[in-house]
Image (cartoon, rainbow, N blue to C red):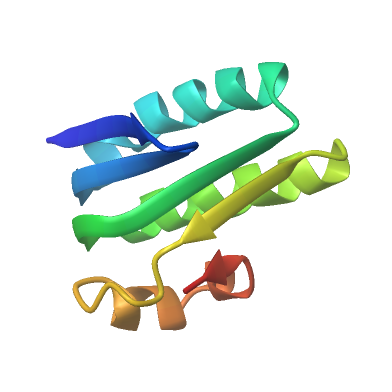
Length: 96
């Protein structure tokens, strides 16, 4: 299960970010980016992440950049997902 909380200007994800919910997250973030020039996403409370979710986040970061928008993703400090993030192409977009 994935939960999204809006706290102090950023969207904090909690739970598992996996194939089953990555499409819903993609749709949600695309809507946010349609109406906002900058979206901040925190992965610090994610327990697990899979490659399909990483691909979704990577594509959204790339698309945001191409449309002169910003999708900032924080989560490097989350030890539950560090190894997976470090082995992905998303690592260039991930902040601490």
